[in-house]
Structure formats: structure tokens, C-alpha cells
Amino acid sequence: ISVDQLPGPHGVPILGNLLDLNNPHPIDTLMDWARQYGPIYKLTVPGTTRIVVSGADLMPDICDDERFDKQLGPGLVAARGTGTPGLFLSETSDPLWRRAHNILMAPFSQSSMRGYLPRMVDIAGQLMDKWSRLNPDDEVNVPADMTALTLDTIALCGFGYRFNSLYRDTPHPFVAAMVRNLLEAQKEAKELPLQRKLRVQARRQAREDSEFQINLVKGLIEDRRRQGDAADNTDLLGRMLTGVDKSSGEGLPDDNIIAQCMTFLVAGHETTSGLLSFAINYLMKSPQYIDQARVQIDEVLGDTAEPTYEQVHQLTFVRQILDESLRLWPTAPMFTRAARTDTVIGGKYLAPKDVGISVLLPMLHRDPSVWGPDAEDFNPHHFDPERFAAVPPLAYRPFGTGLRACIGRQFALQEATLVLGMLLQRFDIIDHRNYQLHTRATLTVKPEDMWIRLRPREGFA
Ligand code: HEM
Image (cartoon, rainbow, N blue to C red; front, side, top):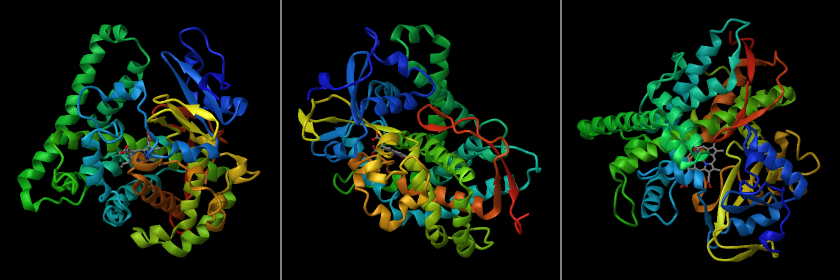
């Protein structure tokens, strides 16, 4: 079956399906089409055709690194700009991607996570303190507080810097510059080069914002060098400054280290904050799972204020809640691959070289043939070990796949387990607005306009 023969939504001349996707909920639109056209369909966007896949049986082919590679769409290539890219925006064939990947695998491995825990507890403790000082009627903007937490956590564990977002009403200038740059990159992806040329002020601001961020990280690198042997190089920045790629014998140039720091901030904060926000949404709609989680939390954490590494990793049911949230709403909802040479997937569909195949994770993860008749329902018991063992490994891919899978997976899961564990240990969640989940997709997808109240649990006032 050729790409032309695949089903798919009708588009308009030149723009194809672009107009249908140009709304705040493009992922919902893609999911509706998957429900209508099935586990493999085609889309046309200006200049190209793309395949969208959500069938678990097609995954073994698409995830085969020998035959397929990550594809960076035009939007991501544009976001790369002219400088050296970080891991996320690099081509697999770029020797610097491999060098950085080799150097960074160890500091992102499970065995390195123990070292980051005290810094994660530091920031999580700040959020708990903030919440414990609220008046009973105060409202908490969940995605906003979670974003402050995840940004501060990655900055502290990444390069020993404190944004102190939880103590501010307006973002730290670095964060403001980063957010402006991200919005600008998104705007740019949707406009013609001439339109952008005309926005002189926006271009100047974008340049100033990038320089400001680069200079801050440069300053941190210079500080480390000045401190010499006395520097604490146990964070990601230190590991990059001192690390050598065993296969090439080379370290990373400074501009690449700076690009990696920016990448961790961008890739690491919205995804994890969205995960925590979705998990809270699902829990307040299914309080029986709060009760189940608390049996374990009370046993493992008791009234401890600073959980240890061992304690966090004993919170297996909290982890199942997070896994289940990432099943229904994987916060990085798509990744795109392309065949290295013409090939066939699922035994019958042609996958021509370089044609983008996007894996639509929220639909892949709701396949009833894999998860059972309650595939659309939030049920952390989908991840009970004996039940999850029957799920084919490639049917659940919230962190991507193969060589280009998420390097921050253990980091995100440790941080989110700690924070959700501490939240449920100390607070009752009050759904005073009877929140109805609706999402917004920017770079990632997260709940929108989500407010709760928190009350200290008995014994934690
Ligand atoms: C890549 C998801 C947290 C850093 C990816 C990819 C996914 C993903 C799906 C693959 C993208 C692709 O194939 O194009 C997530 C989710 C997270 C999370 C759902 C949280 C719940 C983090 C954190 C960090 C991070 C905390 C860093 C501290 C990266 C990097 C890459 C990546 C650097 C690119 C790796 C490479 O291509 O070599 N992530 N991520 N992520 N993620 Fe994450």
C-alpha cells in the first residue's frame, strides 16, 4: 500500500491540512483523525506528505534504529538556528551528537540520580513550604507552580544555579528570555521568511534574549574554571566540563556545553510539569487512588520532611500513577522517524526514504488490544507489574525510542515521584472548581486553566 493510497483527511490546495491543525488543540485534531481513519493515515502539509501512526503492531518496524532514524521536521530545523545544536535538535549523524550523548549517558543514568536527590528535595521543599502557608481559600495554579518547580530543579541539578522562581511574582530574566525565545520560534515556524524579515524589533529582541542566556551560562562556566579543583563538578555542567568521550577521546567545546544546558531547561521543564499536572487532575477525579497511594506513602515516608533516595524509589504506586498519566497524556505527544532507505512497515505499507512517520503517542497508548476494554480510563493498575509485563515494550513509548530516546527519563521520573509523593503525604487536593480537563499544546501538551485548593492533611498543618 503506497502513501497515496493511505486514508486521511481532505485538505485544501497548497496548504493541505495545515488550517485544520492551526488551533490550540492540534493533538486532539490528530487523535480525532486517528479514530476516524485508523492506526495509519496520511496528512499533507505544505511541501510534504507525512504519515501518522498509532498502531502498536507497526512500532517494531518504525523503532528499528537500523532502518529508521529520528527526523527533525522543518519547525525543529528552524528552531536550531545557526549555532551548534543540543542533543534534542541534532542529527544522529552529527559527530557532536554522539560525543555529547556518550559523555552525558553516565550523568543521566539511574546510578547518578542518587546524587541529584538532595537538590530535588531542596526545591520540592520550597514548594511544600509555599503551599503550607496558603490561606484556606487561596487557589493554586497547578501548571504554573509545577513549571516553577521543574525549572528550578533542572537549573539547580544542571548547573548549580537558582532561579528562585517560587519566591518571585515575575519570572527570572533568564526564564523570561527563554520563554520569549520559545514563543518567537513557534511564531517563526508558522510565517514566511519575508514576514519575519519585516519584524525587525522581534528579531532584535530574539538576538538579545539568546545572548543574555548564553552569557549567563558562560559566566557559570568561567566561575567553575576559576575555582579549579575546588569546584563542585557533581552537577551536569561539571560532568560536561570534565567528561571525555571514551570512543573519540575528546571533550565538549564550550558552545556545545551551553547548547546542552539550554536544551535540558527546555526539554526538561514543561514535560515534567505537565506530567505532574495531569497526574493531579486524574487523582482528584479518582480519589480512590489517592487512598491507595497513601497506604504506601504513609508506610514509607511517615512524617519525614526530606525523603531519601531509597524512600522515593519505594513509592512504586506513585510511580504507577505517573506511568498511567503518561499513558493517557504523554506530555511530549509525538516523535517523528523516517526510513533510511525505502522499506515496508507492518508487512504491507510502503515507507519511502525520508517521508516523516509521526508516532501519535496518546492514541498508541489507548489501543484496547494492548490495554484492554478500559484503555481510555485512568487506572494505575494497568502498571501492576504482572499486568504490565504482558504489554509489548514498544506499545508504551512516552520517552521516545532507541538511540534518540529521552536522556532525562530517570531524572523526570525521580523528580515527579518525589514531588507527587510529598504532595499526597502532606495535602488534601480540593477540586473546588470541578475542573474539566482541557489541554493546550505548545511545545508540549499540558492541562490548561487548572486551579485547585490544598488543605494540610491532619498532622501536617
Ligand atoms: C528526548 C519525552 C523529560 C531531556 C525526548 C523524547 C521524548 C521525551 C519523547 C524523544 C524526542 C524525539 O524522538 O524527537 C520526555 C518526557 C519527559 C522528559 C515525557 C518528562 C516527563 C526530560 C528531562 C530532560 C530531558 C527532565 C533533561 C533534564 C531530553 C533530551 C532529549 C529528549 C536532551 C534528546 C535526546 C537525544 O536526542 O539525544 N524526551 N522528556 N527530557 N529529552 Fe526528554
